Image 1 (cartoon, each protein chain N blue to C red):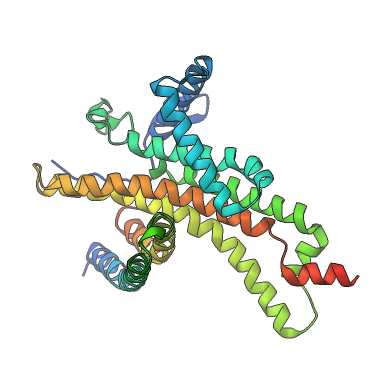
Image 2 (tube, rainbow over the protein chains, first blue to last red):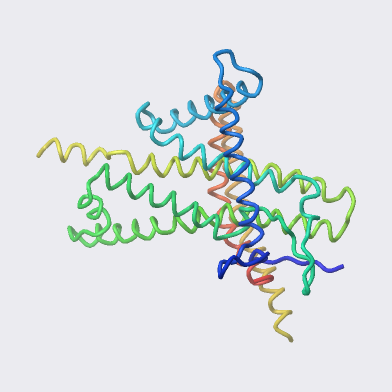
Length: 252
Length: 75
């Protein structure tokens, strides 16, 4: 037996020239599951909720009040809650689905060896990167809408004095570093969980991997929460008007 | 020595040094959060999620080291 860990996901088959990888294949399944689940709950909405509707309502309400406690106003919450909660729920389901027993044993036979049909979605960097880009673009759009394009640009590039110019450049770098830090955090945690599980199974097949699996379960939930909350915090920071800006506009 | 040996060494050193900073940082965060909960136990519900978020932010440099180590080993 040999320990096989790969950074890139395996390619299952091609549609035309488009490679279908095992993470992509599974992300389709997860999306389909979430859509069907949503439609199912939506079709059975009642005034007196059943058990399933109770659980969903509890999740949504506690999520909503948490988002409101961070972002502040009701109006902003209504706008930002769908994005943040969708991200949280997608990452949570995708991470937890990697712990369904037996799914990694389903493989396709290939010449170069068996290829696993399923793989944890967030251990594919392209998926995480696209989600981070959604966060990044939303933050920029919100900031431009709140501050106006020229004032927002002036935050980064200004020639008032050398210190301000330098600080503006640092802000620009900090803004770009958000993409890297946010995406690598989720990707690194999930991929490291996979590798740790594989290494532990390789070293000691019985019972020893269990605590590490448990650690992986906690990571799966905490990272979903952290990604969503950081998205929320970035949007909140972008949507707030700073005090010196307020006094500036008041004096004009 | 071969390239493989240096790869293993580089990955080990990168992960080992990269783990120092986040470990100290997370320790500080957890200690302060526990202190705050001890002073005001009613605020535990508010402090715990914030603690997780700040811990995850502290962790990011460790995760960079981990990603670099993994790329060296398997990339």
